[in-house]
Each structure stands twice: as C-alpha cells, then as structure tokens.
Length: 123
Image (cartoon, rainbow, N blue to C red):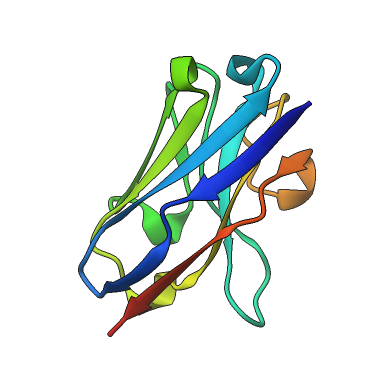
C-alpha cells in the first residue's frame, strides 16, 4: 500500500510555470507506476502524464505534450510534474495516483490516490 500527497499547486499567469510534487510513503514505491490526472469543474478526470518505475518512456496526454514533463526520484519517493507554458485551460485540481500494472490513461485502473492540489491559470 502507498499513500500519496500532492503539493506545488497555486495561481499562475498564462505562459508561466509550476512544478507539482507527489510524495509517497509506504512500501516499495519504486514498484509503482505513477500517473498524474486533473479534473476541472464539471468535467471528467483527465489523464495528464504517467511514468513507470524506471522513468523511461513516460506517457503524456495530448493536451500537455511538449509543455509538461514527468519525472521521478525513487530515492526520495517523489514524482514531479513540471508544467511550462501554462494555459487557462490547464486550470484544474491535479491528482497523482499509483498502480502496479502499467501506465493507464483510465483513472479506474489506479489503486491509490492523493487528495489533489489546485492549479489555477489566469489569462
């Protein structure tokens, strides 16, 4: 089992950057696939990015390709989401989630979730 805590959200102007962190506690963090999702008001939860235990070959959702970068530091049990060139449509609550099977874009495939961190991008 793993517990996840997101941090790093905030208010930023369009074109700005933020780095989100997902800190994990529990056993065998390096065995878990970590995904970032986001949910805006009135919308479904959307896949943003995912990384395997090795950090090799991350997967990105189409809306964030070329702007967001996911990375992980297994020694620190932390996964990061560097978000550049932010747009107002990136405004959402961002969640990190963990599973053991693979990088899925479907939220239901993930077993553990954090409580989320709010990102607001002003125009």
